[in-house]
Image (cartoon, rainbow, N blue to C red; front, side, top):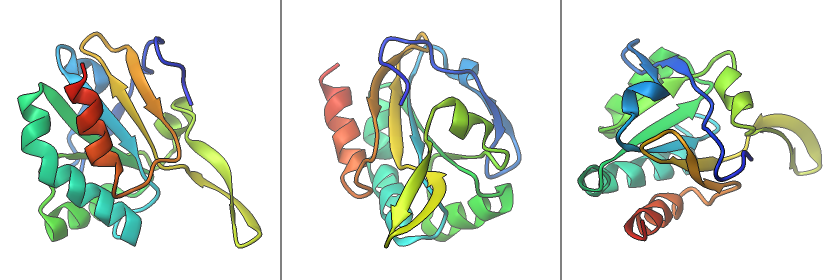
Length: 153
């Protein structure tokens, strides 16, 4: 995980509609940047839908939600449409941003070792500074946890 108090790495990634997004375009807003393993899997769907349910409250707190995985733009589009997700999903097929934010890790599953995205969430302030960094978050609890953290700022 990157350290709290450091500048968040810049990025330029396409969303579910193929539109490019950069961190800099969100200057003046808080950014909830969450990394998840895969579209349309049980945990990732629960997390995305819970972020979707809370999205109006996040917007009231001047925050945007950006979900990032290594899935394709087309996969993100299907995921967004299937669940009516109101926020931006960014496609990082080259894993450049995933690696820049230090969430590509060795994982063990039933004794098998592989590499993958560790479910992690960063809260970035209006100036692009990381103010919270949460690794290995629980999918369903993470959106509410982020709302609680935002409320305390």
